[in-house]
Image (cartoon, rainbow, N blue to C red):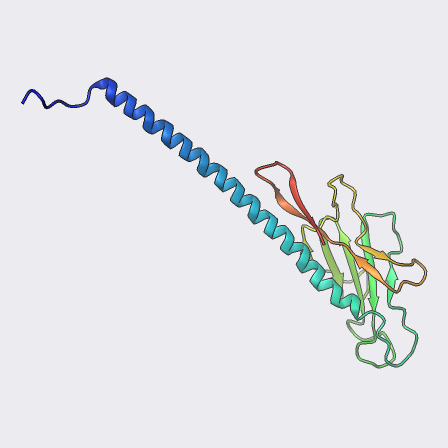
Length: 184
């Protein structure tokens, strides 16, 4: 029975140190994996926000200028004040084909203000705006200056309007510490 012995104190300390080191490495790996997972979630969310916003605006712009009775509808009215922080465009279309723009929804004011995009279906800037997207900053380079959302091919008689939407993550990227931006 002399051959049977338990672990010595030194053996127990070495085994405990090895286990603590293994668990420390494993917890560090799990924390890094959680950061990368959150980063990927933020990227997907930002891309979805930008694409969803664009998907709402583009069909409205495509209907611009619908003039079945030939009354001479201008397709859009551009932003009257390009020096302010509000980026806006009014889309005009005779959707009910009655020869006027007096029906509901035939004048749509779309604007980017702050970190959101909103629209007012009757084109009245003093009416109620509906928020259609949030976290849309249109600050693609992160310098704090909002780039134009609506870029017409002509300021006097536009026939084509390019829409640029830049979404920004609500939280900072846990890996880089910067906000994630995505432009479509």
